[in-house]
Image (cartoon, rainbow, N blue to C red):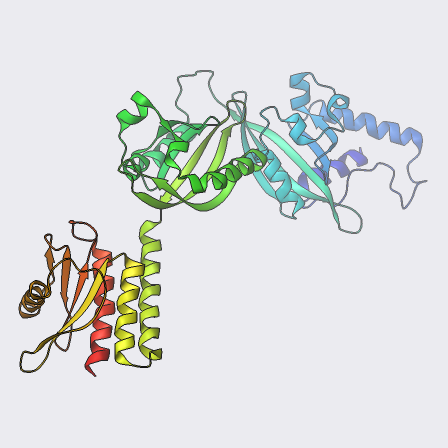
Length: 409
């Protein structure tokens, strides 16, 4: 019985199992005689016939090297039928990201951990620890599993996990979309539908194809993510663009996980990063314009270069720098790109903006007049009749103000 106590101590009591059970230690081969070996084996077998747990060990490749306990008795499986097989082969759902496999990998990395599993209506807790040899090297994993509860056999029962998932989906913190391997969107939360300008009717009536939401240049990135999903059960977050119903593109961060290998279904998490990316781009543009003011040989070169940056980076079709100097001599200090109105019209718009100290928008000329400092006004020409978004206007004002102060010195 001493050998039995040693085995249980190694696998259940010691937080880090030191080595696999060996009834005949190599350092003293004469210590245990064959008869004693048989007695120890019989005692071990008798113990596992009544212990309410399942104990096993694997090697570093997750090949099962020892298994005994209640789960085998319940399934009427002999240990010989499964010894030598890998855990991925033995798990019936085919998931590489199965919690039990992830727990074994964590143990192989040197960390003891606990995994909770629901299987066939029962709830199990498995404790996994590194299995070490005499030199303290990790050579495998030791595991102990016990049933800790069960779920009623009722398909209509709403489980705690289902409630938590539903709450996470309905919180609409991020876009969540469920789909299959064919690219069909099976369900989505309101955050995802709103992000793409879609409605619940679009989802339930005509159906939505994920591929139709992805621009052509991102198709290969999407295929790479699917392959990663097949291999690992999840894919690392990556940036891409999606096409809204109105044709506009939005920059998003996407990650996904497989829900069912058999039904080829998964879930994707989509976060809108357009605002963050736009803010970073605008800050970078402000820094670039400051560099121009520091490095330009003359004020005229500085002004024309900054106006060109505004057009190329913020999408303005034209930019003009106007100044009302002392004695009311109105002059266009610099310009770049296309203008839609005659100079007198633009001058009058600039005077009004400067006098009222407020930004003016003209749909007729598609021009924005922004009063600055030192009598300067910047006039920016858009490509549409709608007023540009606030972020573009505020960044243009900040850059124009820096340029006005530079030219006024």
